[in-house]
Image (cartoon, rainbow, N blue to C red; front, side, top):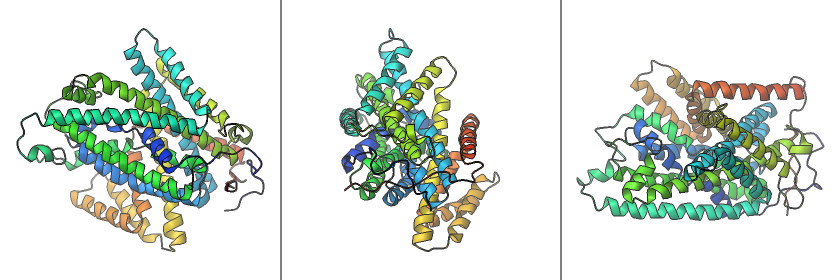
Amino acid sequence: MSTSSTSPATSHAPRLRRTLTLSDLILYGIIVIQPVAPMSVFGVLSVAGKGHVVTTLLIAMVAMLFTAFSYGRMARAYPSAGSAFAYVGQEIHPALGYVTGWSMVMDYMLNPMICIVWCSQQAHVFAPHVPYIVWAIFFGGIFTFLNIQGIKTSARVNTLLAAGMGAVVAIFFVAAARYIFSQPHDGTASFTRPFYDPQLWDIKAVLGATSIAVLSYIGFDGISTLSEEAENPRRNILLATVLTCFVIGVLSAVEVYAAQLIWPASQPFPNVDTAFTFVAGRAWVPLFAIVGFTLLVANFGSGMGAQIGAARLLYGMGRSGALPPSFFGAVEPKRHVPRNNVLFVGTIALIGALLVSIGWFSYGLGAEMLNFGALIAFMGVNLAAFIRYNVREAKQSPILPAILTLVVIAIGLYPGSTMNAYIVAGICLVVLALIAPPMAGFTICFFLWKNLSWPAWKAGGVWMLLGIAFGAWKTRGFRGDLVNFELPPEEE
């Protein structure tokens, strides 16, 4: 891919500093996704999947590992802070890279906003005499302040948050084991029912719930935005991305397995949205409040991590010229952080959180718009990985994988598809996973994206149209060079 001879970020300008170890990257990923991720959606998954929460999370883990592997492999080729924006732009076309980056901007900037909203609402429950607006300003300010201090400061905070959440999860496991083994059971069936209950099993319900469960993994892609601050990024980004998905998946499965043993699917929840807190309270009464506080801490860490990712993404796009480089491509020389971007993201997130408080924007719509942008990026990265590693380097023909992908998509979209057709689609997907794993990831992400709500599609579509219009204006109808993907030289 040709690039211009001048880069917005020269070798003499301040740059990001490589200080993050593999453990730092894994902790960052775990915090962004949250080690208590399944707790907030446990009730929804239980109802949608007819009690098979463990099964849906494990299927979702396998599905997202395809995309995680694609992210990791692309990070080895392009250790850039721009993440999917750079991968798609380099391997497919700069215009598509810009579209991918623009979708990620929506994803990454909505994530800290949603975390500010959730933290502020939960804190308002704990301290109702303090107005929501005050809490929103507090959390928005503290996110921004800590992220401006430098990436190692953020890494240390992540370590403390991971330790705190890990302690609560450990306490839950102890309380759960004590409760479970103190109750009567009907033999082995009691312990296998969370995986497969013959009386409640419904394959369509399980697959539908899996599409919800997959969304709980969104956030692992943020690891790749730290490529220019990671030690040995060509190795560590791949390992951290895949290991984070795997660790979160296994931990989540164990958490909900214990929860299903405590609260069987046959028993309705007092409140589906907060179901896990009632489960924890049944295991040990004090855990009702402890889990609520833990989820507050989890969203605090996720909000901080999301703001880091958003700032690094904007830095990558600014340095490449897709956004004004004088502002977005600048690095603060003392702490080596893109301070302008941190402040920009913090301001936008706070404004959005305040708009939620006056009813101009809903939390639910923001969450679905976040998924709209993330899944576009996931599809782009999988496609870029396929082109680079399966077509160009392996010199394989893309015809068979393309045909298999189209067959699966056609069967999935056709409303009159029969069970035999779905079996054919499943076989095609398995073959894709064997011969071209990135295309299997692309296909799965496509169906998740397709199943988002119509309001999310409208709002996400408006965002994408605005971005495309900006790109067209900037390049006079996409006739000029859209972006410059030249990376600065590696630091010794």
